[in-house]
Image (cartoon, rainbow, N blue to C red; front, side, top):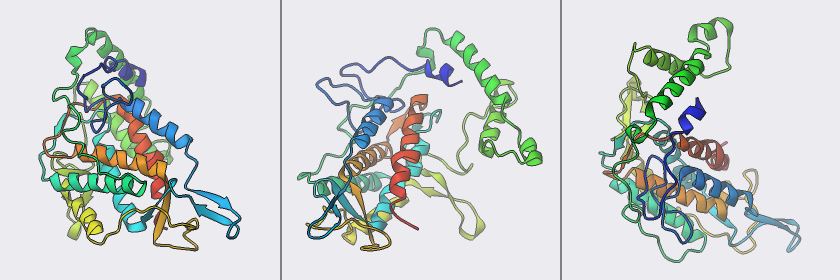
Length: 332
């Protein structure tokens, strides 16, 4: 099924071509002399290579006494509460980048959140030694308003037939909810088997469910896709812009990332400073770039066509890669 979906990838990005939000990053262009979009796969490969070569934020020294010390230029110190704020958008971001998400245009009051997220990204860069703020990602990249469409594919019918067969086999091999309850089978998540049933109903013409949000009340053009709140036991969608309050509060309190002090020792939760976390400058730089991408995607009027399968590796990198790693630096 993955192979059948992957063949629908569009042609390689061309020089001067606008960035397609369904297939490319929209906060920056590819590195190098040729002005072209950067695909999700290229971005993930670049970030993973940077992480693999990362020397880390500290080194062991014997002076003034044996310990691990943060290295200026290689480390960024972040207040723990601010780190939680910086990674909070990842949940919404992953859902917005999920392959298959229908075409979308942001209609909510999100301008302030978009601005504050970019400011937070620049604060990370400043802690790494950047002297000047970067421009807001909106407007700095030429973004396509119309993305690639299925009808653009010449051999659409053969591809559809191959996908139909693959989807049928994949969905038929999923255990049903009833079987899982009877046997205690936990090999797949309940949401996966529900999706398989949706696919079977769709292929059989019994239903036309193309997409499910985490809750039926969520409108992704104005609400966060990460879930709903439950005040007094009733589901209430959370506007995208609500998160701006957390970013603004951190800015008002002056809780910003900083470079390590000379001779500052490695920060442990069980000793030293429990109110701060230390990450490498490489990780901080990637986090800043991800925040810029989120700022661009939730800005008022931002549009995207149907998200392509190639976004899957990007969502995995955000949720299970760097996102999981950064989340492990705070909390209990």
